[in-house]
Length: 586
Image (cartoon, rainbow, N blue to C red; front, side):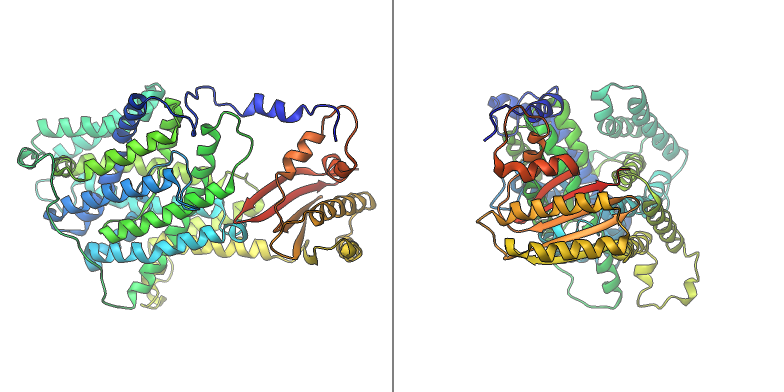
């Protein structure tokens, strides 16, 4: 046993683990009035996107206005149920953190295409059918994490903006509406001016609320110009059931629905990538002594997102997603307690059964919604850029981003032999985010599978198999022409980690996998293991600075601490992924 005290973990906690304005952590219980007031603030921030996004689809698709009330009801109720599942966590479903779920702007283009073919019934059907893919992705998060990366998700999000931007511009200019004149221009520009002024010159609070304030200001301006009709608000009751009716499901088949479903599926996977990022970010700001991402909770966030999408479809509205902007609001309040999420879910449920709320949202004029959507898309584009560049930019990522984005742009605008594309695949290929997204996935797979510098080895969990491991390492080193010094460090670290994992008694698989990938002067090592190994990266971290003697059983980890760089140990679905780098040292 170590007689001295490790200093590394304490340093890490003190320097990087404590959010400066954290008032109540996720497991703490603030007073009821603080929870309720904070939840009310957050409701005001997210109710706009939850209701406006499906309204855009309904308006542009020519859905009967009497159905708007049901669409808003379904969106609020689905968000309420989804948020409760996400915050409460049922088994492995849900993150257990303050993540809010609401209507996804990423589905605007494909939901509009579906609504134009089969109304909201087809939108609902596609949402329900694509939801299991998100749950499946969560289950396969470990193996797929190197294929469907934030880079791929970022490219598709940028292409979503390209596909949807024309919708925002049509709403702003009143395209296809009678009486669209200079007043539309004044309202659109006025709304944009308010939002951008607050975003540029406002403090943190005003920047966060710029969209909501802009929506309110634009509506007031439109009312002075005679572009609003508030009669439905006064006629609506505060409490009651919505007008309109459940759209049901679309059960007719046509070949073009295959392409439409593939587009929904792709956007669903991209939404999952964004949820992964949100699931990581909320953990950083919700714990007083944060040290490490819990990927089981991230996986739970994905499951909750998938269940929420199925609920949204079953109720007859567009799919949902976790709201990244709400994370900034949570951080600003400093109250990350789980109890706040219960209030948010409850408030959303109450709003769903208020026809007056639906009337207020449907009374917002088109140019205001268009300006609101324009800024929302601009922010979404930035989110795509951040996702794509989150792990740095290099030759491979440059190829994937550049080629995929412009392939999507080209096909979306029918600039590449459109007359030669078969009718069966035309709806899919003609969709920019679908074409560009598939291109990004294909390129990602090709880069991942390129044979140069890669090798894998599956070995039984038995110390007697060390000799086979040595043979594998030697053969790989000869192929890669690894230097003697790097070969020595590769042998030491892999054998010590293998020995450590073999010493653990509880495991679900009698074998483990070792993957090697040589890139430039660095060898990337990955162990895939099913034992109950706990936080090897923390154990190694604690051994980097120590006083006194080390337990002989920890000598192997001490060797890892000496040679391994960027050591990470994550657990997803009961499987350990332990990775580290061995750079060349002259």
